[in-house]
Amino acid sequence: MFFDLVDEPRTVTQSLPFAELWRFLPVGYLFTIAIETPVLLLGLPTRITIRQRAWLGAWLTACTYPVVILVLPALFFGRSRAAYLFVAETFAPVAECALFWLAFRREKEMTTSDWLRSMIVIVIANLASFGIGEIMNANAWFGLF
Image (cartoon, rainbow, N blue to C red; front, side, top):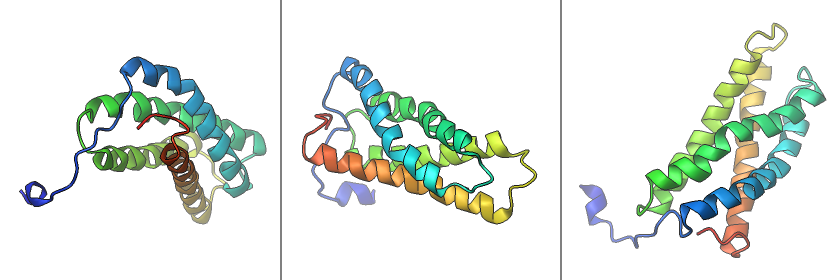
């Protein structure tokens, strides 16, 4: 009911046809891992090997990116871009933290501070790719919205 009172311009979550999103998927994926992987390489605890950190940079994004780029825009088509961004940018780090936990839950050497640090670094990596993506989007470098 409150939302009916807000006089906010209505913007759609995507302006390109679904086929264009499929074409954008590999470019956006590579862009995202190019930003997130260095954050994970530098920020994750040393108990996680460099090879594992690099793998996580590609794997975590591979698991969440198709949902963010293909599924959620379809679900939010014609709705507020802010609502889409809220859901997408909450989903990605939460899902990636859950996947990280599933992958490393049997690591006996991980301390509570290692787990907390890992989750924070995953969120920072997602915020970095989101922020840089928004800057690029604002300058029409991607042409998505």
